[in-house]
Length: 160
Image (cartoon, rainbow, N blue to C red; front, top):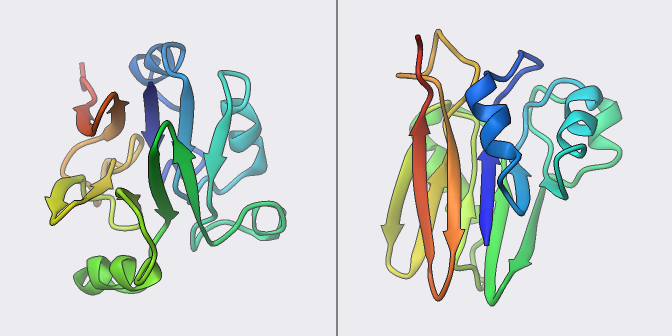
């Protein structure tokens, strides 16, 4: 199973590279800060979308998306949460959100900083932002490949 992972798109246009890659995935996960329900609906034209709302998402998205959730993909449990507060303590808040829950991976956003690290048996994955050119070190999105394990890849968007 191939999963496309986005966060913090902030109603900005996704690059052709990202859109082309989304045509090849089985599922899209977006972990918040769409900023427009139209952006969610646009992603649904590719395939099924699992999502949570972020701190910049208004009532139209908060009324239909949860703050956090756990989804099952193949035989794995994946936690979804945007994140909140200062980026300095973001990972602590992400861990606290799923404390005591069995998850194999946690996907989050908010900081615009890509992360693909395993702690113990849990993969912590932040795709960065596919549209930010100010706070992110580079524009990026993620791909999760699920076979007999979960493997995350951060895809740096070609700026040319």
